[in-house]
Length: 269
Image (tube, rainbow, N blue to C red):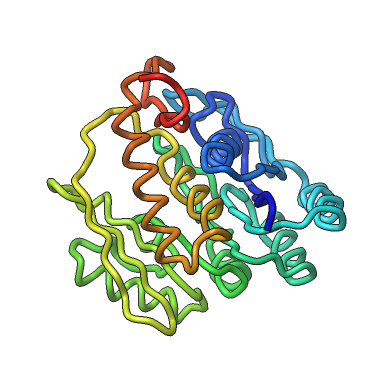
């Protein structure tokens, strides 16, 4: 394989910390050629989301069809989809073209607390997307919404919820445990045909966490074509994000929750 072509299907974040902008930075930082299909425009900064303008689902499908008829895609990251119509459109294109290494970050709520997925669209994520992707990367609140359960409060509950997400149709689940708090943070990778594995790391103390979910899922997508399996891609993606969090204080972006440093390996310290 020459270069890896990585596609993001997501919303735009004008502040550059999350969404399409974060995805393209991550792909580039990790040596992938980034491409983007935009599902929504947001009016957004480090302090919050003040507006969302969804792209019509038929034009999302048109963007995807035009691109996929021409370009080989080695991995796909799916982020903010907004509503049921867009979810259905993306699912139909996945059925037609069957791209490899599809990573779904089920974006529901922004770091600021603003909702980015219509409540009525959660069922569409369950039924239309989970069976069609290769890895889903929910945090604890997102997993709870997908399952219609209370949020997991410990690692044992996380294991149960990861198993139930697989029962819903997911092939593999990276359940992110950052919301549990504590000195360390544990993510759990579960698969339909392999034992679950824990990824535990020291918690990075920084206020600059805008776009961490987007960045991790994008890093996994960018690395998966060059790794033997998702386990290795997840391990290396988490290392990349950890350093991006450590180096985030070098940036000076906005007055709210700042972004991670996507180009920490490229910019001088």
